[in-house]
Length: 389
Image (tube, rainbow, N blue to C red; front, side):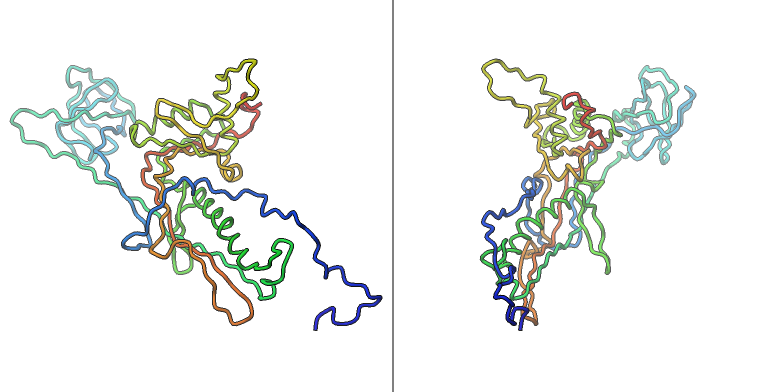
């Protein structure tokens, strides 16, 4: 029995029994590409699955610190530094233009010889920089213990992502304007695999912060926003973004890691890419034979290497005032274990319907935190930039 089982007065056929001809059906209009996932590397599952993915790196012994109390008198022979474990007895170090030599260490307090090596003892302000040059050892004296620095470890949690859909047997078989050949179950699987899951994962890489799971709360992976994954983060506090800001940030990273680990890709919103291009548009030259104009730049050669410019459409809405300078291949997508990458299947059901799933359990590895730069908080008002106005 259905609503059309009785006779229809006048012999008319209800209009909703007809399938209209809609031949020009577009698969989708909105973008669903995923630039980060295309650039990031991949890594196979670990030999021993762990709920926390960890990575580590060695650290050289530090050569600089600061004093934490002002040195007022030229005769003061005890000074306090931020970390006394950086020093050994005999170390020479420089504060402003005065050289000092360490003769004793008690926690963060150093006993020192003032005005060493012919320099003049002077007053020094709180937080003045200290540069450690290394020990000057008295002949035949016993060697002092040197400091040693252990490496560091960072981590990310794994995250389970699961997408499901359910259709009755009728809904799966009845054609629609979007699915003329029916089979809506497989069509929905394709949509989840090609569009929904990749975009949601891309947003996780852009916005996610890691979270430890509990019995009632799931674990979550961190992405570029995770504070420890990028050491150098510069806040411009609503000022305009300038070439100097970018170069200063790159110099900071270069001073930390050197040329071999320098990042090579700027990832930013389309507006930010236009801002960067506008810095150099005045250097273009054309003549009467030119028949087209080029106003975009795809890379910039700097003193710190060539930097590729990649615009990311999702950042227009979620991170318009941010740019990241990264080595994309340093990031690795990794499943929890063998068989825990993206997989799909169908649940057993008791009724005449189908329920499918697409799921994943994995994380993002993000070593080399010192080799990255974030600049954020800059103005996104186009009128503030002469090259865009």
